[in-house]
Image (cartoon, rainbow, N blue to C red; front, top):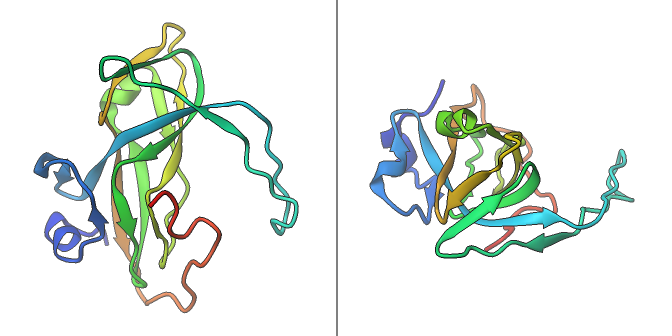
Length: 162
């Protein structure tokens, strides 16, 4: 079951929203806080013993805008998310983002995760896309689990970007 707006608000699943207009009938619009360009390679393994997250360099807003050419970028959302033990969340690109030739790639938000999440913004438009600071780029949807999770997320990203 997708959690409706009133449950999202009453349960405080998302905080640090910028405006009431972010709350949609079955989700919350996620907004652009910061963007980063990849400046180094990463390494992924099976058990994270050799995991190395790619280095990034911050990109600056000029006159409250950032022009992102064709490429891949790490982004951080303004909103702080706290997933309860009986839910999970998914984030999808807003349709306006897709119509501009860009998309948002996100992982699953597990029960027990909390933080100011990061995602991958991919600009496929060969002419690039201009983003205003705090642009609505994704919509997070919360799913109620049939049963509460027996184990909660306790990984390295818990509490990230406070």
